[in-house]
Length: 310
Image (cartoon, rainbow, N blue to C red; front, side, top):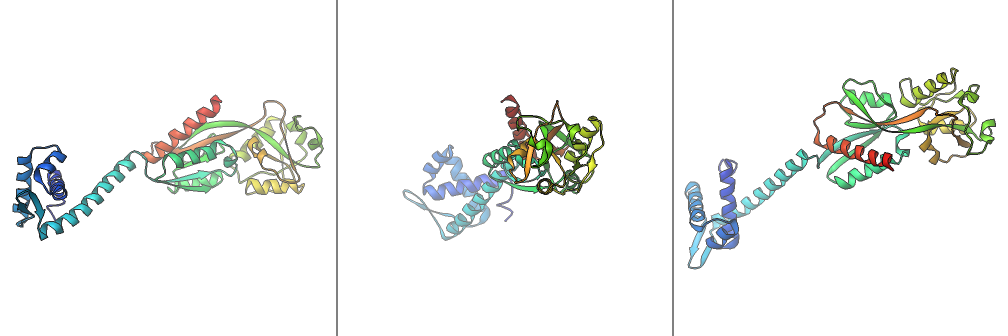
């Protein structure tokens, strides 16, 4: 087997053998290989000498395979086809066109059109990359980064506290108030904005534990408005927060794209002034050499740039 897995010239000689076998004629095989006939004949003779078998039976008008030649032809074709596939797979992996990528997604991120568009576009552009999507709050995403269980993540924070992880800001969107339908400020028209300070007496339903992007943004915005928010019942996810709002147990601050989620008993109102912003960022490890990750980050950045331009 050393012969077949030796130097590049051995593989080239094997391809010469296959061409002659398929053409049944040394001259035609030489033309197909774009080489002269005498050097091709010498290579075939050298193969026969090294293997100590006759591979071809010489005929007046060409050649035909011997029994040994037929056995070698079947094995050599399969081996070279497998090798060609392996080499192409290697090249695709090096270009980031094949592989696996684990993508984390903050619970509110999919409601921003940029995220599903990026996922869909990447899947269509790189169909041989296996995408694994995992939902997680900031602290859960940090844990997975720290354990090397995640490659990249759409997060709701300008930064996350994980060693070696950087966040590329993609987009900012206004934070809006999700109010119970019977809330006094819910009776204003949808076009009217409400003052954040006017919600100071309401219990705030915060999403996730401390360190979660949207939770921290809510507390910071309330303090900037001159009050410390009353803490209502905590919610593990955005959907459970909206359910609590619908039940009249408090209010919640959510990204404006969440307004596409229609839930009975919940109304959304803009906040007066510039108001707090919800950041959508892309978290990844600094200096990660993965070609697949590089392709994903570049594509997401390009889509985010197009969104800003439009």
